[in-house]
Image (cartoon, rainbow, N blue to C red):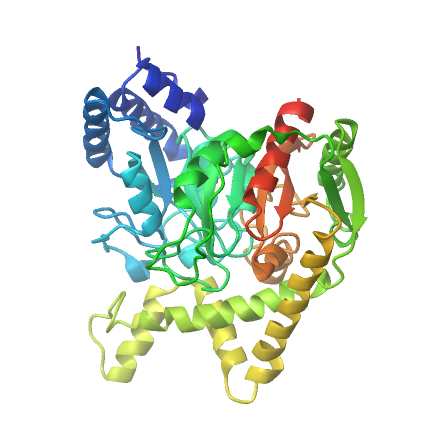
Length: 480
């Protein structure tokens, strides 16, 4: 019997395949039909590999029939379009990379392929992951499944919209300053940003190398734990990954809320946040307390500097990383340059969009002679203070619970001409990236107009098992 695809969680799909309720080919075909029927309204995907996906699904069914086992064997997953998957496009939602087809797998793709995952398609994003709304894509604007007049968040907005809109069982995103957690909050999904060094970045187009991390976007916390498991671990191709044991994330879910110390950083509960967002988060905290968690007030005093520090460090690293897209080594090449200088200038001007240009210019400025110490050097010092704030906080609590964003999803076009407003929306998410700690967003309610709200759970570096436990316990014991 063909499955009702839109209602399936990752765990339900995996269990249905294991029991033989349906085959991977049936599941994948149902997914492809859903995308074809629904994605015209959402624009969650940039490309769909129907032929390749069905081939992979057939191979998974054959492997299962031959006796192979595996939790993810035959499950289709969507991938953000800056993560390389062999044989599929990897445009980074930019004209700079239009027409590029990846000749290799990123480490995360290789690990999922080894687990038997089916790669269904490529999800839309802000160009080169620079944005918070997925309006910055060079090709299309993704819409929020809960209200198509609103953004899905960004930069992993396509992944979140696909999962929330029933067009994906699960998806991969990347998070440089909140780009998994914020769209997960806006779309009513679960999104996990692993600790820096927990998941390999090899084969993932770099935005800011000291901040980027790959993570899952799913329907439930248990789904997120299942998908994170094969992604985590040391990779010899990525020297920033740490050789540390990887816990059994699904087993770690069962701890419950009783006795868990939840910290509330006073700097994250501020005036100016949407009152409905604040109310949803407060209700989540109160529910955890009623279920036996201990609530502790903590302080992260350098939070007010985090956005400024982030946009200095991230743009500086982006300026360096995107220098290779010059029309000679990589990327779009202008057809009729008048000189070498004209080749560089026109190739980059034609290939990059407005927001990417803005961040490259800012990053080049803060790295320039005479300004490096005043901006980039000082930002790195403040980054250390932000990290130390978290170390102190986790000395008195197990996890932190905060809003993900100060507002629910805003209307399409609302921040396009006000980049500062968009940047300030990252105030609750960027500190985790600066500190290298882990965090996730889990749905905690809706506004009166039906827009989802997420609560953020932050944990210490390599404490993914703690945040998954807390979020799962909230999801199962508190949220109704």
